Image 1 (cartoon, protein in one colour):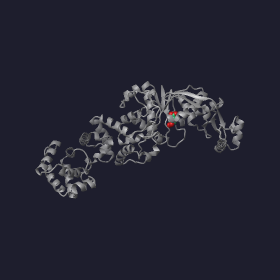
Image 2 (cartoon, protein in one colour):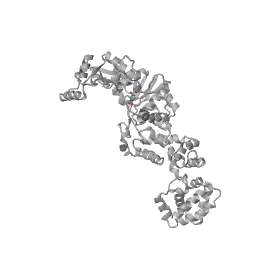
Image 3 (cartoon, helix red, strand yellow):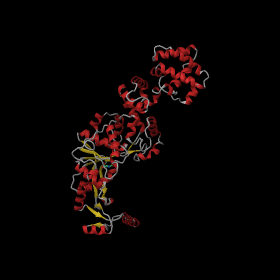
Image 4 (cartoon, helix red, strand yellow):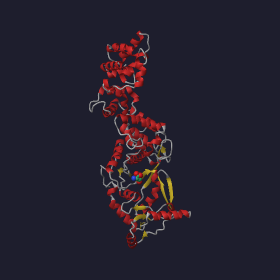
Length: 517
Ligand code: GLU
């Protein structure tokens, strides 16, 4: 079994749909002990292939989808870049011409458009008149002398139909009459996808072509090429499209504005955006977009969560078990379980998978995962993350850390006491407006200075005693205290916060807040 993923290096990174298709190929290969080939479809000559390819490879690697052959790893069916396979394509074009399955055509786009319009005016199907077809070299020379430039077209059957069995779609039939004589080689000698893909799939000995549904309609013309060249046919499986949240339209990187009107999508995006901004990432829709895998890597999702989520975009187990580890995926993945219906991207489901996988991490793993975000946000120096403090926060935050970047919600634990930023509304409400707030906080500061030992239990006891002595409730002090030491009015347990910060920092922060009042 040999399968492939064949991305075009468009510069868009690893789109969710591409990652899903790659995942199904990878799982199929791992399930059957086959090879997962990565081929770069760069026939549309483009300047910075390497630059455009890097984010795709990074995305695949981060998800753990290791390819057996392809860029960086090599293999004995290379080269794996279509831009380096020109001689194979040229030979195939010659063979198709020799077999009479293709012809040179010297029509101009305008001439074809005219013929098409004429057919439409008559209410007929457009069939090319072949007026500028060069049957012989002499014809070609004559057309060229007129300044025309030729392309090579497939000479497709006009009657009957193409039938094949697709592992997902079942029996498929396309009438040949619906096909045009597709161009396979441009005037400049470059070849098009339908030719290159077939030649590569054959020479790379691909046994199963598993790809997105949008290519189903390309399959008849590719089958025509396979057969004309005398190549055996691979098996085909066309995967349902990954669709927008709540619709059947294909998910697109270019429609971020539209998706942000969906509250679930917006929640996922805003959550990531806050982290991205805190670590200074560029956040244009081009560079920071939940339709692309990079988004998740950058803000600290777990690859296992994303892989598990992607698996369910078109695949399910009979008993609908949703949480599956990789071993289970390898064991059960099969094309027969791929559904036909398009699968909508569901942001909340992805978030819930992330929550699930995050909770399964050990404390050590979580600490290791979140620490780089503190460095990236400039809160601690590289290699100097205060391990005990990070650990204490991880413990206190518990399930509130959904992605690694969420550690930045606790940034106040890592800033200098003198640099703590305040939520001004909270500061007014808790420290300035209640007349007695500052006085009480000042009095409590003295109690705090003398509290021993500095632990959650004794800190709690000391505050309770303090308020009881005055016939007050905890709230009379705790809200002001929270804003004074954290700058904001939300966060986890007050006594945990005090313990984590330590006596010196707490007193310094209270003094600064009081001076500010
Ligand atoms: N480069 C094509 C794409 O990205 C590959 C299609 C195929 O798998 O045949 O859509």
